[in-house]
Image (cartoon, rainbow, N blue to C red; front, side, top):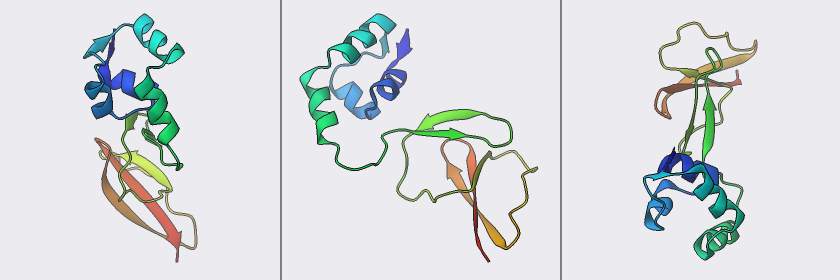
Length: 118
């Protein structure tokens, strides 16, 4: 059984939309495949309404340990050079000729390392 969140990630829709349209809190793999193969009208419309390249879900992965998660991207997230778990102190140094600043609070436990030309 998959959670509603996992189903939303697979269907590439927001979690709120999955709940609003009756995706149960737990769904079988077979039921989800059935929805993917024969999408309901609301899902077809949702996909058809997408005009931009903004992703519904972002894949976040730590450059040090490889921990990963899927999260809804936030408007304030910067374009980062590296993403690391909050508890890592050992990170690669910035490239020469660049300065680095840190952005905390990416996903559930990440820090974005943003390198910019000096």
